[in-house]
Image 1 (tube, rainbow, N blue to C red):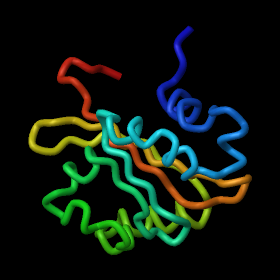
Image 2 (cartoon, rainbow, N blue to C red):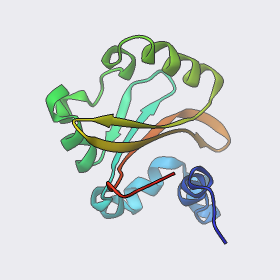
Image 3 (cartoon, helix red, strand yellow):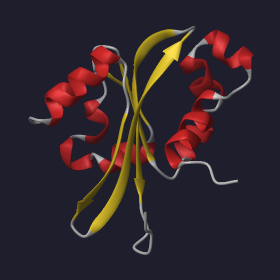
Length: 138
């Protein structure tokens, strides 16, 4: 069975054992720290106001020209020009995700931004940046 990529990512992050959900999202990161730090894609997490809470090493490396780990504690809205800033404000307000492909310096990346929740309460957004192989076709 082929699962659409966006649904797979939501399943991947949200279908963990219920006892992990009860302690909240960062319980998962505490228990699986090595998992997130070894993830071969950039993972960035912000709270409901846009403050960057977590960056795995791939994310720190991806954003090194913008400050890398120094971005922790900064508001991601301050890191984006228009119209991206307005789009992010809407995503935070409406608890919505966004998925798109971008190309920079001849390299394509899938950007998947999605809301995360703790005990059913919206807590912010997560972003995955996934490098795409040259041969990848949609």
